[in-house]
Image (cartoon, rainbow, N blue to C red; front, top):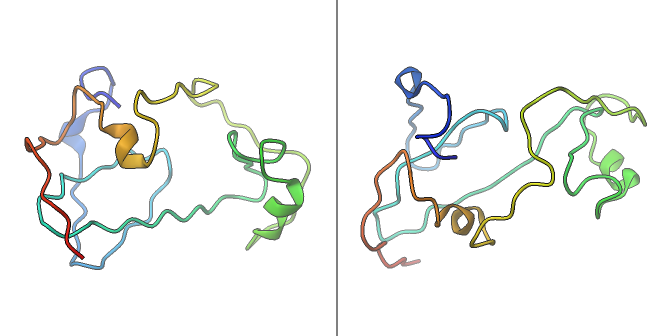
Length: 127
């Protein structure tokens, strides 16, 4: 998202910090971000999707690569349904592809405006 083009009041942002190894859980539509990793160590990322049983994903969901049975097998609470809940939210479908399609980081690499400053060259990663 381009901070210059959105209507988010960044003055209301709340920092959420933690020690190394900490993690955060938040709603997918929560505006969130972190400063560039300037260390020589990789920043780990784990994306774990949790959704209501009646809130099917609009992309890569039943009928788009995953079956309804596969979706239902992942339910941890609630009952399977064939009636999805759809909320009116501002979304463009299909999603426009990123100029540099790839990982979440690659998709964001072509952004011209960023909330966090970036360095000229990222540090070389070491394991």
